Length: 154
Image (tube, rainbow, N blue to C red; front, side):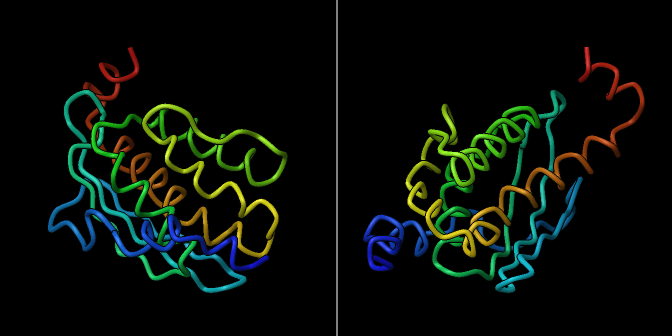
């Protein structure tokens, strides 16, 4: 049964980590660690004038499932808004914990991890990259000038 979890698709996603590394001057940086297994993601972002992710880098040290989720995220995250990331995170949690279908739209690729729902001990590692990304974007938005924040909110 564990072999199904580590399918060829998951292993392929895990092997391809777009935007690997760190940014020299990020607007926001965040780190998340899965306490049970030690999987870790550090994410740097810069935002454009509309609050969308302009540049993104991730340093992920995780199991194949965490790496696969980070791979999907890296393929799709440029241009995303904080709302899109929150929606994807919520849909991902619902998929893992309560039988939801998973993210739609730009992050639909995360549905490849649906079988992780049967392995609760693996949920946290699957979520580290998206949680770190959300934290980094929120930090970046918080650092924008008050004038920029007002324009982004309106």
